[in-house]
Image 1 (cartoon, one colour):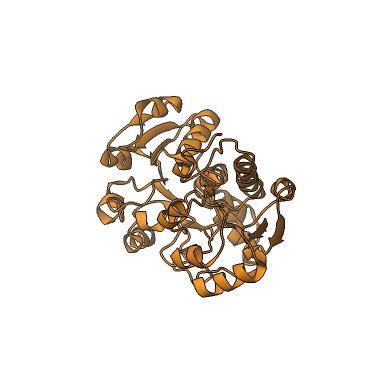
Image 2: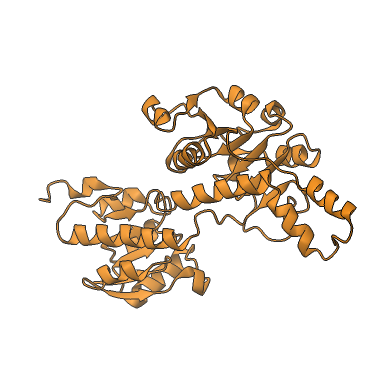
Length: 338
């Protein structure tokens, strides 16, 4: 067998796969190449004679699956939405994926954005790097402390919208690390999960009115696109912060920009945007009450190691006729003895 790996992949995963196949490793973050056009991807796969694909963002559509001799697919994402699952399953091609492989990473960044806003870390850093601020008098020193007076995260009321893999980890960090009061809006989560973080289930309106910080962690569905708009932002306290490390589509970005510009809420920490990739012309950057990161919530070395092991161990299990943990189409195993 021969694997074409274009996802970021760690040696821990390579050491497992090398026992079963030859490997061509072309990490898209190093090459800058994402195969979104099936013609180019088909040409590459056939040229390399690859029958195992491990990718993060390349499109594995019907054309790719029909034109190449693919035997195994590994997707280093929380959901394999870049694969035509119907065709893969018809062809009995196993599709392995990596749910929650970066959930801890995103949860950590979420807490980081909260602290940046509450303690004005971003503003302090910007000012000191600007070359325009010098503490040369007692009055300047007093102004410095007044200007960057902040809030502690401990004991605050935090509203979490979506208690999935990331939301649950954020709640754990807040409750057991900062003794925060946790409010949960998630119509689909069971009460047991909420009790594990000592949370309280509330309606969205209550969460927005009572929270000192509102943190978004819901998956985007047809029902919740733009769920945080002008009306919802007006329900928030003027001292409250909005944190979004989930998806930009959950928020009416225009309404949020106006609310921040007019200081109708205290601030925001944002890792996701309607227009990406983010660069220095992003309209939120000039606002002094916003911390911006470039959709890098899941980008950690730990997440890379984790996804590599999840994929490699599952492929090894599959090849050894053992039951894999993260197989998206387990129906292909029907009738096989595992």
